[in-house]
Length: 303
Image 1 (cartoon, rainbow, N blue to C red):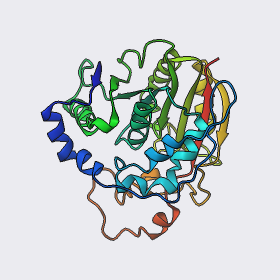
Image 2 (tube, rainbow, N blue to C red):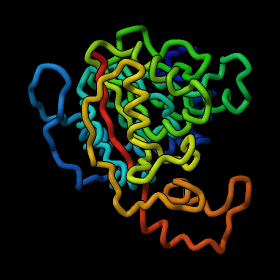
Image 3 (spheres, rainbow, N blue to C red):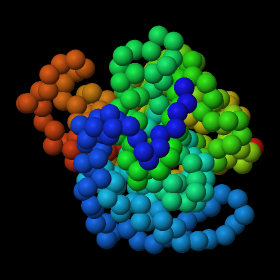
Image 4 (cartoon, one colour):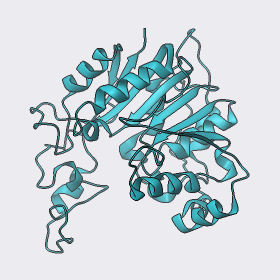
């Protein structure tokens, strides 16, 4: 399924956005004096420019306080610079979740004459659950505000069609999703193959994922931690060339030994087994002190 979301969203979506907090969050202006001007890394002919638009978007009122509070763990400026984001790109984000990156990428690309494509739950897929349909509708509503410009939503998954017209995307990004795709046979190769098809020659696949290393990956990453070798092998099998790694999202305090997997750590802060109520007696101090997970930040290129 593909649809365009315009600045003139339907009244029903706008109302739902208010319920979800999307429009309300826009009103929360943030001051980010810690953000400094940097030299942005670019894909293509070597040149440098000061990406003042990205810096402005990172400080923008469209970003809720809950997200900007996580910037110290997620490093959006450094990560996007490493991945090679630049003005005017066509960017596909696979499984955007709550929209941490959407709140940055959509307005940035709108302001620089680029294009943002969100590839999420496909509500029109055969046998799609009501939960999947609601997730798609909620995401569209949350980002219906005019500040996000005109963007596109497509389905992603085993039965989904192309992420974008073949050979048109400059950057495909996914953050903290590979472990989920390992749980369904064939899903990781399918999604990486779709990413490869969507990208232009020379285009970049950007992956952030909870890192199992130096210990071994547990089975199919049911604890949320994936081995770097697993990701590199899967990307290469899809046709990509490994193009580098950054330690910007490393966290040496994370020993990857938690009772409820990576979800024990912030931001999930799980304190009981799945399906069980929150355990008020669970000692969170150790896990909160670790912070967010240790993560790999990888870059692959389509030849």
